[in-house]
Structures are given as structure tokens and as C-alpha cells.
Length: 454
Image 1 (cartoon, rainbow, N blue to C red):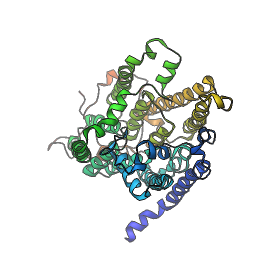
Image 2: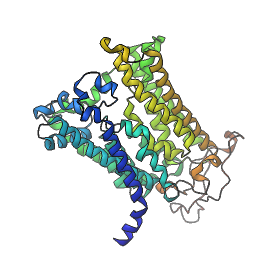
Image 3: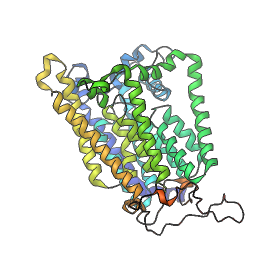
């Protein structure tokens, strides 16, 4: 215990600050939680305190004592359904108590997520986790939905991977996917780095544990009520372009084929596939292997940009990975400003949809400007991360000679898949640093363990 306590002490200030962030996020909802604005129509928008949690108490028939999936189909994965059921049982029929209990669980998730992010960042960059602990966009969006729970699980899974505990990594990542779908993108990042390093056994351990865990938590619900379980997947497929998504803009402005609702699913999947192919090409063609957090960020950002809906709380997904991918404050601050701008814009835009209160809201132009500002600042972040991958000397994480502090078995491992040098343009050059690969114990006796170009 003394050793554990000694290691924990440096994280205590971050934990306390994250706790402060959780409290500030709760206080931000005061006009709704204590002032009754949730029950006054546009009041929840003009006071900027909307949440999904409180109205879903009635919309999902939790107030009637119905069990998610079993008694009523729920539009969320089973992880959120489980949190709903736990909070329902503890709330004893009180909608406000249901919200408060959920907030406590999400606040704990935020603190845990911040501490895990700090561990992933490493001792030298531990304080980068402040972006997640008390960032303005995090405080504004913390309790709109259940996203913080998925964030803690996903970060926990990646920390387990970084500590080379592959089975635990698979379990936690699978639970994250069973709570929100987006952590599925991280398996792609792991796969691509496995291709470059040939570390197949650790990856297969994680993938196998993930598959088993996902089935373990989903199959019982499928057997009890398949229709209730599949509601999330059918809803995701059937829903049209919605608030925040670029597809919503295209349809609103009637931009030709991009506005065709019949082609929406295929266009969204195609756009995501195209961006992910770009990420894969970067991962495999880069002269030096990208860091795991860089690929996680790029894959997740691609998923968000091409999604049919882009809710304000999705910022919670991206903050830890944007910071871990590129911990430079300038571009991050510009993006956070854009996220805050969008947060206020969406609620005022919703106010304008009510004819009786349209004068209190904003019109199409300011709303769509905020939407594009958010998308473009993320696109800029993606471009900067790509530049860091192609020019590792500009990557602040690698400036001290580190390779991939969060990479687990990838850290310091020589490549097994490298393109011929002639296919890499002369403008792209690996960083000159003190980094040297660690010994590759998987090499056969007599082999050097050096990279093997194809």
C-alpha cells in the first residue's frame, strides 16, 4: 500500500480538479434542476440546461417501473440500459432523483476518466488531462447524456493495453462499445499498428476478450427480448440526418445528391469508409509508425464528422484523444471555442423553431456557421496530427526521444511492415531523435529483429 499511495499522490490534485469540474457541470444545470426550466418548454433552451436524462425518465417509461429492453425497447446500447435500470431502482419513482443519481455516476466517470487520461499521458504530460477535467466544453456538455461512462471504459481499456494487460483491455473496450458505439474505432487503430509490428498475439488476445465480453453482456438481453435489444441498431439505421451533422446542412440547403435522404445511409457509410481508408494508408505508409493515440483520434474524428447526427455532448468523446494525440494548446483552444459556440447556438436555434418564441432564438445562418466552425476546427486538428505523423520531429510527445508511451507492446517495437523508401517522398522524413527500438523477442534465433521492408 505505501507504494500504491506514493504513486497515487501525484494524481490527487487532478482528481480534485476533475471533481470540481463535475460539480460545476451540475451547477450549470441549476435553472433546470432547481428552477423547473425542464418543464417550461423553451426555458430549458434559453437557460442552456437541456439534458436527455430527465425527459427520458418518461419517454422510456422508466417512471412506470418498466425495465429497459424487457418491458420497453430502448434506443441505446445495453450498457446505458443497465445504467438506466440501476438509477431507476435507486430513484424510487422520482424523476429528479433519477437525474441526480445518473449525474453522480457520470461525475464519478469523469473523475475516473481524467485520472486514466493522466496515466496515459505519462508523468511528463500528466497535466494535459486538465483539458478533460475542467475544460469549458466538458462542463457545458457533461450531463446531457451518458457519454462519460463510455469514455471512462474506453480510456480504461486503452490504459490496460498500455500496461500490456491485453485481456483486461479487451473486456473494458467491449464494455465501452456496449455503452456507446464509437470505441469500436479504436480496434481499427490497434489492428493497423499490429500490421506494422506483427504483434498479433497481444492483439488477438484483446480482440478475443472483447468479442467474448460483448456477447456476454448482449446475448442475455437478445434472448430475453430481441426486439427490445435491436431497437438501438434499427433506430441508428432508420434515423435521418439530424442536428449538428453535416448531412443535416446538406439536406436543409438542398445540396443535390448530398441532400437525398434515400442515399443518406450509403453516403454516410461511404464517407466514413473513405476517411478510414485514408487513416489506414497513413498508418501503413508513414515512414515512422504513428502513435496509438494519434490513430485513435483520427479514426474517432472521422466517425464524428461523417455521422448522421452530431450532438453537442459528442465533444466528450474526442477531448481526451485530441489532447493525447496533439497536446498543443493553440489548435485545441480554437476547437474548444468552436464547440462552446455550437453549444449555445443549437439551443437558440431550437428556440427559433417555436413560432411563439422565435424572436428569442437565432436563424439558419448563425447556426450553420457555428456547426461548420466546429467541423473545420476538428479538420484542422486532424491535418495537424497527420503532419505530426509524417514529420515526427514536430510531435511534442516524441521530442524527448519517446516512441509511443501509450502504445503498450508497440512502444519501441521495430516495424515488420515498411514500404520501400522510394515510395516515400523526399519531403517526408522521420524524426532525428534518440529513439531506438527495444529488442524484438519474437525474432527467431540469429535474427536481428530489425524491420523487414516488403
